[in-house]
Image (cartoon, rainbow, N blue to C red; front, side, top):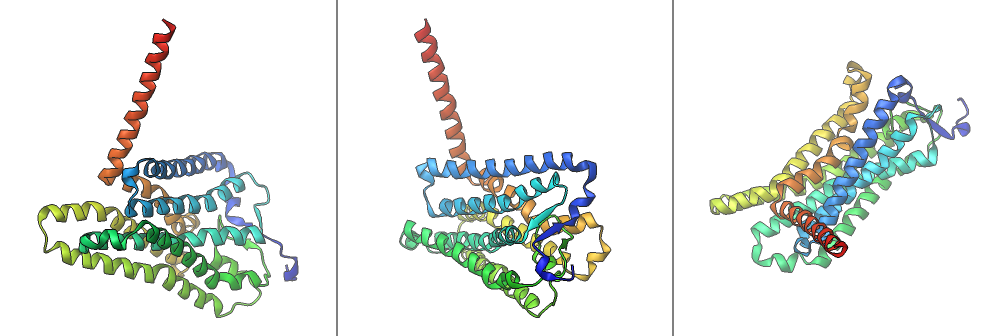
Length: 323
């Protein structure tokens, strides 16, 4: 491996320890991936079908669900394909594409929650101006900005990796982790540290600050309102607060992976901890919003019972016709 020009693929070495458990892991990962896609798709379809949910908050929620599907699709198919691979190799272009798609979902998640927090801030703190400020076109512009901002965050942070020369190709993980890829380069530079700090600032710190400011202002207004209005504010804001808290915990776990204590934990824990957000957040979002927000919960029930009613009528019609 002395000649870096020969490095055309990376080897995901963590799969070598899977052994005979690969069939069990494959079934579990496939079930989890399908469940994530189905749950988020159902929520998107419910919001799309029910015109009463064509409001800024639920349009932003749709965007959040799209991001959950995006991050899951950028990770789980790779995991599934590598389970039965003999070489566990991933070509450099595919690895970079996988890494870019997966890392784009990070700032997209935080920025989507920031947009939703802003929506709640306008709704609770400036209700009379809500319809003027949160127009449908403006909401779609916000969503477009979220994705452009997220994409540029990744490109500006990690584009230097694409031009690195590598003197090794063994990645001790189950996916293309940018820190581990940088360690394989022939010469480590200050770009690695700067890119991590820059990415943390633009993808987590800035959106998290906007979210915090929004909820602090919401809290200040809620203290002056009636108990009923406080309960409404808590009902609509609670899912977002739980999502942000879960993401914050996941970010801490991801940081732990690159710290000095990584040598003090088992290899399995070292691999799973950074994937905490990728595993739990995509499933948390649809269930958290689907079961906690009354409008979506009632809409799901209406669509379900309406479908059952239609099926019952069709069955009755066919039976009557046969007679």
